[in-house]
Length: 331
Ligand code: BDR
Ligand code: CA
Image 1 (cartoon, rainbow, N blue to C red):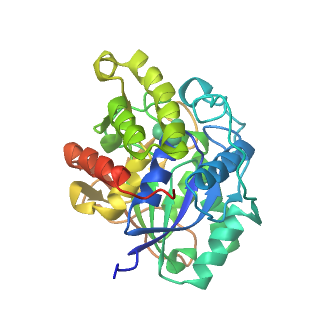
Image 2: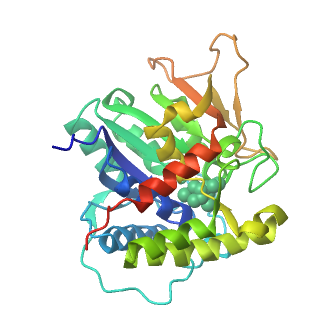
């Protein structure tokens, strides 16, 4: 008899090539149960993100509720979409899409998060790997959300590592810094998986070639196509990545942290987001040992936030390959 998955998850995402990797890792992992998917603008428009989430899940033979979420930042104008990194369609410009069944759940992603959290209090982990507007809106709908969710794990931000959209900022936080600031200020157990660790884990294109050859399935074929496009971008940026046609798996690391936190070192403390000026989107942590002196909403309790600072990269890569190579796809 197999034991039930340990981690019930709502996945909030903007697919996106590394989002697609993360989704397939979660679907493949026996300890993860993806209860539903929220989508946001970010790598693509929110309409495209929702269509991609539906397509990727259907292609993998899974029927998981997908909701469409926030279409723009809370206060700032929309940024240009990074089509040169993820393709205009977010999946490396797939030549054609197979016809698949499935339609969107009519609820907004924020409403969906609240409904599921209320139905299963204390049981659900929210894994967020895009700009954080859905989570911010969910907090407005349900101020007790931090008590209803088990924890939040997000890919975004950076403490020591240079930013990837400005010298100081990481893309997900920079896209909607006001939403991110709200999320970091809430009183939940939150782990930031940022560039300090994601930049250490380089995934070679060959891994996805081996995967497609082993699975021989439309889902892993689509993933290989998307990763090949994404790796071309990274190879043009960094000579060292060009040698192995490698890419950065960013979002998949959030799930690695969920199932193997022992592979990461963390630092605990209040995280702040810069919402204006040249540091827009920068994430900083209070110095160790300082009393928690941050401004917070009246009546709210202290947050319990931490950021990943180091990762055992080789072990993560081996885990990613083992998990995706396992027989997880419907035939
Ligand atoms: C993050 O930005 C997006 O482009 C990726 O999907 C990832 O979530 C990395 O900075
Ligand atoms: Ca993402």
